[in-house]
Image 1 (cartoon, one colour):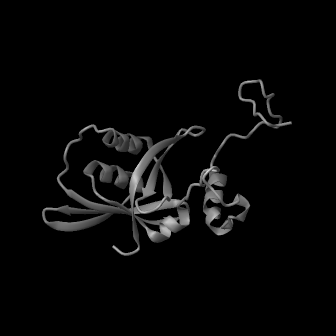
Image 2 (cartoon, one colour):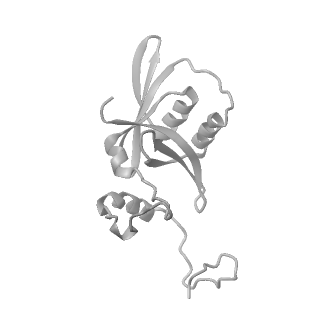
Image 3 (cartoon, one colour):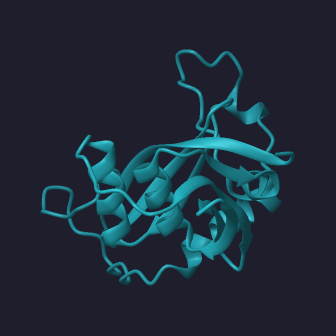
Length: 175
């Protein structure tokens, strides 16, 4: 399975301002993560299996799922199954495919080009990081995917005047 990176489900998160769910996939051989927005039902299905609750069986064997591409900020996936001795594959939403992969305990893969375009490497802890952060080059092309995503979010406008630091919702550090 050339050009594929095996990942596992690291966690399910909720983006508090929007109440949207994210599944965080972690590369098995490196410290790189891939966040994918998912629906609440898919988040619940993934979390149910992760928490150890048994689920019913399906009439197929899921061999693997692959997050195949990222286009216009939308992830795409393929579901590879075996049913009655026949190998089949289907297009699937990544959230549904991941929920099914977790339920069926099958491998999850991400195409290399998807991980390179949208994968995130966490910053090292300040105490353990010998390098000066100013020495780390910024790859504007890779960050553009995230900048475009953040700019596309439909978030409420911030007030013109910040509230005082002591008031609920006030932001500290503003003059």
